[in-house]
Image (cartoon, rainbow over all chains, first blue to last red):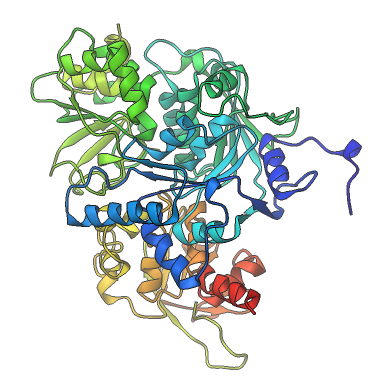
Amino acid sequence: MTTPLASLAASTLAQKLIARASGRAQVQAGEIVNCRVDMAMFHDSSGPRRLKPMLEELGAQIWDKSRVVLVMDHYVPETNEESRRIVRIARDWAREQALPHVYDSQGICHVVVPQGGHIRPGMFCVGGDSHSPTGGAFGAYMFGIGATEMLGVVVTGEIWLRVPETIAMHWSGQLGAGVCAKDMMLAMIARFGMNGANYQAVEFTGAAVRALPMQERMTLCNMSAELGAQTGLVAPDATTRAWLAQRPGGDRHVEPAGLASDPGSVDVQHNFDADTLSPQLAAPHSPAHGVAIADHADTRIDIAYIGACTGAKLDDLRFAARVLRGRKVAAGVQLLVAPASLQDRAQAELEGTLQALTDAGASILPSACGACAGYGTSFGEGQTVISSTARNFKGRMGPVSTRVFLGSAYTVAAAALCGRITDPREVVQ
Amino acid sequence: MTVAQAPGAATLWHTIWHVGADVDTDALAPGAYMHHGIETIAQHCLENLAPRFASQVRRGDVLVAGPNFGIGSSREQAASALVHLGVAAVIAPSYGGLFFRNAFNLGLLLLTCPQAEALRDQTRLAIEEPLLALRLPDGIRLPCAPVPEFLLQMARAGGLLPQLKQRLAALRP
């Protein structure tokens, strides 16, 4: 039965995006639908090394190479025989398949792919990585899947989905100095837990979200993964359009009309006040383990790490520089900075942000997943680390004795400056 | 998935392994071994939480966990390690959503049992078809949330890859 358009009920942004991708006028939460995929992104770890043998076993081809984006970010730069082998598989396969969209050692997929203009409002996308909801910052439905499911997408161009409910996270007010999107996420994750969103869609709304630049919105959607959401969304607006206009192909994209949740359509709304939000800290070994910075003022740190798609984009580097410009990191502390993409690094160099960090004593690491993925680089036995990344699971970034605190780039920089966990509002310039 | 049982057949009792809440994908498939094949990753599955598990689990055993099993990464090796070790099913009150999809894609049955906590002191259980309720040796039955039919079929087929193989074979002349 076809519902006449005139009687369509109110829809959430997530429902509108899924309806579009599944070729329906409207979808209801709980329905299982098949969606056509506009863009599939995968990296050297989840991609070629797993997909190539399975495609060969099937004797199948990629459904549409123009819709596939490959990023080498997890095992680059290669440090040993194993990583060389994995990256070589990706490079050889990219050449064999003549893939048109490949980003090799350009930075982390969740940052490089939107910077390359591959994610636009209205699209339906999948990524072979759990932080794929980052793409939702652009008003696209994007979520992470495993390698076998990616094989299904690569062969058929389609994927099933249970239409999610939408949980609105409504932030009124205005963030104070030294407080940013990462703090908003850590506060929400501490409140709801790592599976609090129960694989539904989360949409970030309110004046404090509208005021955020694109990379900060990306941080919100990125860490929707740590809320257990299938995707995180921000409705596109003038900020989105201005940012996308500067990407490759930005002048050609036509945004579908009405990409916002209709009034009264969301299933649950939680309200937050940005005015009163203080810098947040997650203690070992969970992003949901929220603690007060004041209670850890005596916690000395060995390593301050600014890295990952979550916490080392250009805006994050700028936050750190606001704390560290003209100062030196405390004796005995190692400050490591791995800019999320070469593009972000180049801009940080151009404007002097990177210089401020290196003058303070930072070591600049390659623009790749690095210590965050825990696949190669990792921290030492018994070290205390404060990190702008997304996850501090036991054993992820080093031996089980490594203690990792999570905070914003402001908070990590403040800890580097003082040698112990510090409220960045005391030192931000 | 190896729980199917003909009606009237002798009850198949599964030995239970217990883990707690919030078991993440890094615990199931530790990052330090991710560059290896599944044989090696499986040897280190849950080594920080249940050190005997990987070496002593037997084909057909089940894993009973607390809420939020499989939160974290998209790495499907978290599920394939359990398949490789012969785990017949995982039973938990809730799962990480991405892990849930990966498990069925790899042929691993996940049962969502709100009362999984009641299994805490149990050592064996049976899985009753077709409703996928759990039965304990003392006769107590614990219901599980229904699993969509297409996912059950996927688990029974051994995952998405064998299904795709069949689908493509059917298309060929």
